[in-house]
Image (cartoon, rainbow, N blue to C red):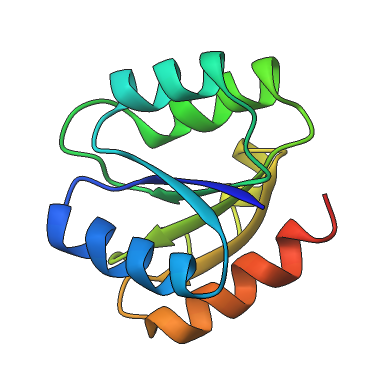
Length: 120
């Protein structure tokens, strides 16, 4: 299964990557909207793990671009904010399948990726 992680925090990207790769996932990393758009346009991913707040660019623009270029790809949003706790992210991003707190344990994140990735 192919996973794209879009996260500004390099340490968190690396942590999630290591846990996913240990479970056999192929993982690609992006730290910005531009890097994510390039990855999405060049390769197919089953799941995108996407931080709602990117330092460079817009997470919703990444999700929108993925929905256009790769409509079969599902997006798991992660956030350190409570802004989307009402579920409104699902109205804004039709490819959203889950919203998790950034502090979710890496093992739990892997389980969610595995669950939704096998459904795509």
